[in-house]
Picture 1 (cartoon, rainbow, N blue to C red):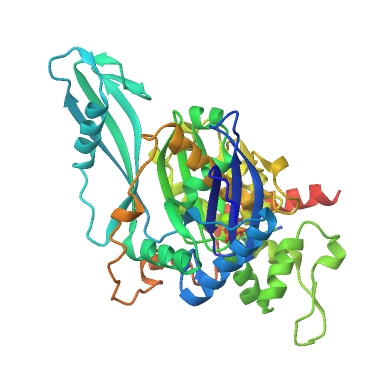
Picture 2 (picture 1 turned 90 degrees about the horizontal axis):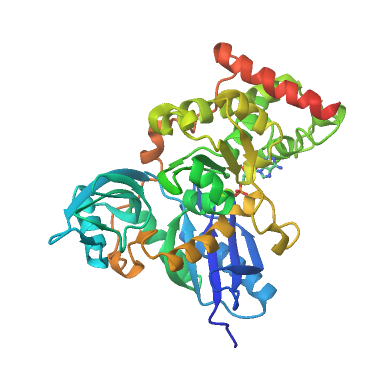
Length: 445
Ligand SMILES: Nc1ncnc2c1ncn2[C@@H]1O[C@H](COP(=O)(O)OP(=O)(O)O)[C@@H](O)[C@H]1O
Ligand SMILES: [Mg+2]
């Protein structure tokens, strides 16, 4: 079977969906590629971004691969894999080396030495690995803000380095799953980073921006400043928590709650809140205020408690590019208004930068992380020092993970499994509620 050597493949492992994206390198401009196919399949066996049932997850990945292969007409052999992990840590360290015999131009060897110096500042716990090592900025003789120091002259080279560490078992599970599904793993990228690359413009990255990607079980954050990602994190709360809150509080089945959430702003009000349960219980009307309050409470928890706490310097105004939203739950109308009100900064919902190359129905904001994987591959090719990753072969993947993995424990600090209590959130919840109601009214007028 023919396979073009210039085929780039990305595989995104999500709580809700597995996405496979296939792009072809542009022969005349090899630094860019165009999308030729997108495969998609529902995720089974994945909870809050983590694999909890390997067999089901393998089957889901296989379905998505088959779907993409049908679309492009050839077999896929290798993919760059985007995945989520619990306990993702993003740590900044700095390093310094002298340019002996200087002043003289910086060589590749000097760059490697300064990266090593910055890496040696960090102690990584035994159960974790450095997945991404990202040079954030260099300085020569005290002049900061240098992107690429190669060839520049001085006597002292310094750098700031961001290291993203993830638990080894997560990597082991995801690689195992993808390999079992029948494709080689070219490399790994943490999902929030892929989402940011898919959502953000170069200009936004340069001025400073916050990428928030809300999926089913997780919310990914990536902070960019001066063109470089300065922090990445994963919060184990996503759109599915809203669904289960609605189901619990309104005492309706999950599928009804999911429907209600998605239709909330797109159906005429009178039809909206009549819910029959799947067992044939008679229809009943649900108070729209109650629905809004449940949604607002969960969103308030997510943004005011968790997102806010992750913002470097705790001041969103260090990011004049504002907030760029992506992921399935970003399709909830009113969410832009809500966020603008909370953070007092510009907010936009991203559509894929290459949406016109993508098949209809597979080109909305929930496919952003897939397009980001292709951009990631191209970025790394263009500048091998932009993201220095642990090669898959160095990740000790042959090591068997013997200890049973407790999925809940690392997340328990968030307390996100309990349904959010409504009506007890005080003034701020009310403000948020008012905002949602206002945007709701605007939509119906
Ligand atoms: N139109 C919509 N309105 C509100 N939420 C939505 C809508 N479409 C999808 N979602 C939610 O988005 C989440 C899935 O996000 P997505 O990015 O597609 O998948 P993944 O979890 O695999 O990252 C689910 O919680 C789903 O309910
Ligand atoms: Mg997603």
